[in-house]
Length: 454
Image (cartoon, rainbow, N blue to C red; front, side, top):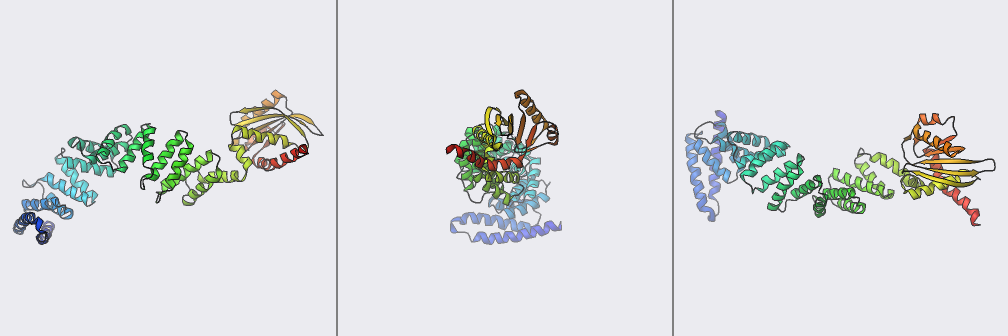
């Protein structure tokens, strides 16, 4: 009882101040002010006689609510909610207006409490269903939000806000095709809603309508707020459609924006670096990867990529061995075969390629001390090479009656593979020895060619 009396007394003081303020309004509003003054004077008199006069509280609450004096309105309706259950009090209206006033003041818990109580009394009110649905959306309770916002939409089919949040909620529960219908209608009513336009593009993307999505994302690439993420989506779609040059343009446009969110910035750099790597442009990819590592050392596989491609960037032949098209790779392998045995006459007699995994080169080698058929296998994968591949190579040696086999990898061989070759005429060459060969092969090839030129 005492807290209520204190609150009512405080309310009466506010009312008096409100009366003074209203008396100072401009002349053009004098008639409306006099009407409000009359209400306030009457209410003040009644509350001084009975601080718990429900009708007086409702009247002054209505004035505050309509004038959007949210703090005073909330305090007034809070008293009425506490006094609820009396025949003179409209409990539904008191709870609804208490909840909406709290929502306007960003007091989410109080708003949820008031609106939930109001909906328990009546479920057919647009304001209650919409605002409670909006709160559920903010709390990420999307299924509840959909139920409430759909009811609000049925009660007011032209409410852009209800359509908007219903569409956004549907998108977040992976119902993109349903979501886009409502979002399109919301955009028709609110053409400047860029967030909804972006979400519509996401809906198209999720619904496998890539061309429509790309059109919208491209439209938003220059937007200061949505632009970086729109560029990221545009570039991703272009990559999926094998349009690498268009993807590079998208990512570069995205990186020109200011104040990009950290996660978007990292992903733009990462995907642009990936495109450069696919185009064998390591020199452009590495600086991007290093920027990511500086800001986020644990981002995806950036550390591993830097270690790998820094080494490649320092060795053109290693780049060719791992990344170049098949024709360039084979030219390098032929050069290695021709220079592998010093002071030897080497003639390549056969070349075979197994997909893009390895190449076999057969050569007749004649040295001052011996002559024989030698088979080379060049393996392009960087992982650990096991016994099965070495066994296959040994079988191939027997088929062509080669005297010796040389198996070369840019990775390493397992212990099982090494044990298998101990009693067989197969040399295993791992990354360290291959790197030395690659570093020297051009010089050796030039030395062999020089006498021919003379």
